[in-house]
Length: 323
Ligand SMILES: Nc1nc2c(ncn2[C@@H]2O[C@H](COP(=O)(O)OP(=O)(O)OP(=O)(O)O)[C@@H](O)[C@H]2O)c(=O)[nH]1
Ligand SMILES: [Mg+2]
Image (cartoon, rainbow, N blue to C red; front, side, top):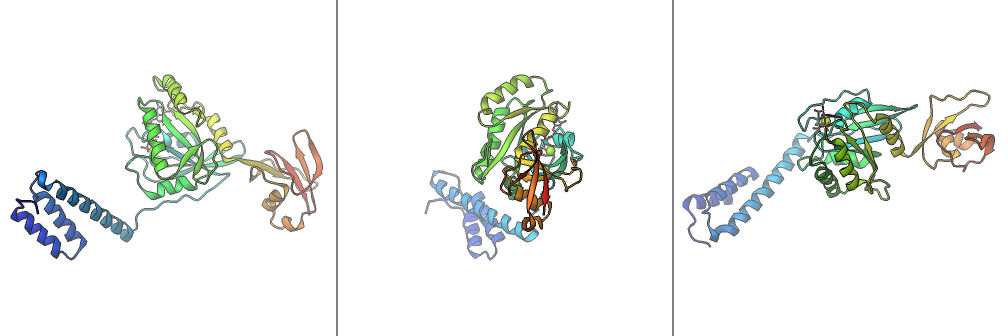
């Protein structure tokens, strides 16, 4: 026992030993820490107290959360696919959603404006893509649901702030925090923890942005494609829409009822690699069983020829199902 423990400390120690609730135990531990004589001989004890306090606080916090029902958010997927806006505070995620969709998220010059996810629909040619605005990724954003949404999304836009002097460190920070949660933002996902991503380098209109864009490309271009944009000025947004569509790895297939015209405004959205049979199923469940043959119009090569059920379709193909 190190010397010089004060009566106050001993009293707190006694309180701890007789405490019956976690709250009382925590209060006693905090009292012990504040009354313990601060010298070399008690360093170990101080560290031990701090560790126990942190652990107990953590436990209490978790219980409180469970009892109250911690906020939990989830966004139902809509349209051709779900793309997530991921990035540092103030990068312009919300302003991008505003510029690209009908949604009206709050935009402000201070960080941590966005607290909950907000989806909007982005039109690309004849499809609608869901774009979800998220709170920023920071050391403080430890909400499990935020990473849950990113994990289940179809793809991500990593929004980088070209007006920020420290954009490289910030981008690294975001990638590292995501990695700690087991999520990797990549060009070509190979595993379930990898999310297909492009970088939206935002605020291209800001002074010095062109130089920082060069830096950013040096840092990240062999890992992720970079698309320069300005949400404020509206530059690069068409390219971003196209990139969002490409991220989803889907194709549009049009159904043409025999003897009728094709409806170009109502594509069926299928995964890349989908076959005639997949399309038949999407058009009408019954077609899976009843499909006799299909005719295909595709680019220059198919002008209504018959194709087998395993024929792989391309974006823009028109098929006529005969059941
Ligand atoms: N110059 C310039 N400013 C922009 C641009 N996009 C956003 N901003 C400004 O950057 C600030 C932050 O924009 P937000 O859209 O709220 O940023 P955010 O990434 O959603 O921020 P959090 O919700 O805090 O994560 C605002 O003052 C915007 O006006 C842009 O393209 N150019
Ligand atoms: Mg925001």
